[in-house]
Amino acid sequence: MHTLEKLLKNCQFIKSAASLEQCPKNSLLEVAFVGRSNVGKSSVINTLCHQTRLAKTSKTPGRTQLLNFFQIGEGLFLVDLPGYGYAKVERSQLVKWQQEITRYLIERKTLAGLILIMDIRHPLKETDQQLLSFAHQASLSTHVILNKSDKISKNQALQTQRQVIENCSNFDSVQSVQLFSAHKRQGAEPLYEILTQLWRL
Picture 1 (cartoon, rainbow, N blue to C red):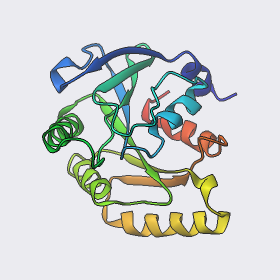
Picture 2 (tube, helix red, strand yellow):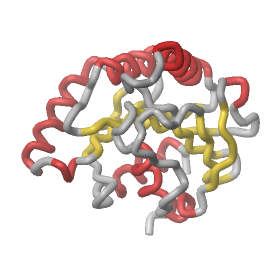
Picture 3 (cartoon, rainbow, N blue to C red):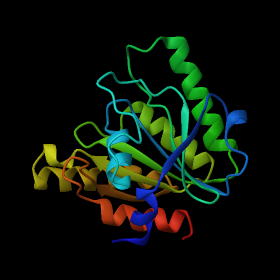
């Protein structure tokens, strides 16, 4: 078992924050998971941590409205950011979420990297590209996860991966693009390696 995998099995929820000011003060390094609503972000986190209810999943996209902090070790945090881009969320609330996410990405000193999760069947939506731009401005190391790769054929998945890599070439902050399936637990090992580097373990 991967060393980080053992740490993540003991990952615990610490607090939720509605703004940058409410984030934990004792953080040394954080890795944030972000993505459009309904891309399976919570499922990816739960899969990595071998827990079923650590990150709350919902059949109603847009349910996660706060920055949720999970501790994996002393001073090390995994952060689940609010999902974005869901049409049924009120416009004013959507704008507020985007403002807080942007502030967090640009101003949070302890943020070491970003895991951007996309549904492989609907990659690089406009809001994804906006987030990549924010990460680029902040020189924030970004790793793209194409989740739900089990929903399409292997050839389709590899073709989509190549297309996303090509389209992300304009963003210097994007370090990697990988396939992932939370349902079948495929792609966990390379993601553990990426997270190990980001948390400097």
